[in-house]
Amino acid sequence: MMQWLIPVLAAGSVLLWLLPRRVAGVGDRVGGYLEGGTPDPPIAAAPSNDARLVRAGLSWTPTELRVRRVGAAVAGSIVGLLIARGDVFVTGTQRSAPGLALTGGFAGLLFISIWITRREERRRRALMEELPLLADVLTLQILAGESVIPAIEHLAANGEGVGVGELQRTLDRYREGHSLTESLVRTAGETAQPEARRLYELLAAGHHTGGRLAADLSELSRDYRSKIERELVAESGTRAVTVYAPILALMIPVTLVFLVYPALAGLRSLAGQ
Image (cartoon, rainbow, N blue to C red; front, side, top):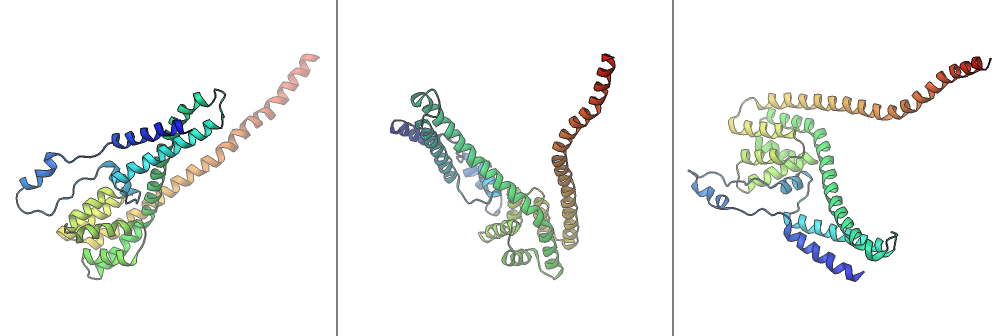
C-alpha cells in the first residue's frame, strides 16, 4: 500500500498549488488612488468561492478551502487503495489500485462540494422563512422612531438565525469603517437567499435617502408571505405527484389486465366453438 500512498500524497500537493487563486492585479492595487475625493474604504468583489462559502455560513478562507479539498481527495484515494488491497476486483490489486485511487480522490472532491451545496440550500430555505419576521421587526423599530442602524443593532442583539447572522456581518463591516449603505449592498450580494436582496437594498436606500421606509418594509413583508404561500402550494403539488405517480403506474397496468382478460377469454371460447 505504501508504494501507492506516496504518489497520491504528491499528487494532492500538486493539486493544492494548481487550484485557482485570485491574484490582485495592478488595477486592484492603484485603482483606489485614481478616484477623486475621499470615498469610503472600498470593498473588493468577493471571488466565487468566497461568496459560496459565505452563503453556506462557513468562515473558511480560500486557502483553507483548498486544504480541505486536498484532504478530502487524499482521504478518498486512501479509501480506494484500501478497497484495492482487499482484492475486490477480479483484475487484482496491481491493476485496480491506480484506478481506485483516482476514483476515490474524485469522490472526495465531489463529497465536499455536495456538502457545501446542501448546507447552502438549507440556509437558503431557512432564510426565506425568516424574512417576513425580519421585515416586521424592522418595521416596528422604524415606527418606534429608531433609525436604520439602531434597528439593525437591536435585531442583531436579540435575534438569531441566518438573517440575523447576515445583519451582524453587515454591522461588523460598518464598525470597520465602511458606510452602512455599502455594507448592506455587499451583504445583498452575498446573501444565501436572493429574495433577501430586496430587504437589504431597501434598508440601504432608506438609510441613504430616507422616505417611507416603514411602509415599504411592511409591504415587503406581505410580499414575502405571499411568495412563501405560493412555494408551499407548489411544493405540496410536487409531493402529491411524487406520492401518487407510483400508485398510478401500478394501478393502470393492473386495471388494463382486468379489463382486457375477460374479452380475450371470451374470444378464445368463441374460437374453440
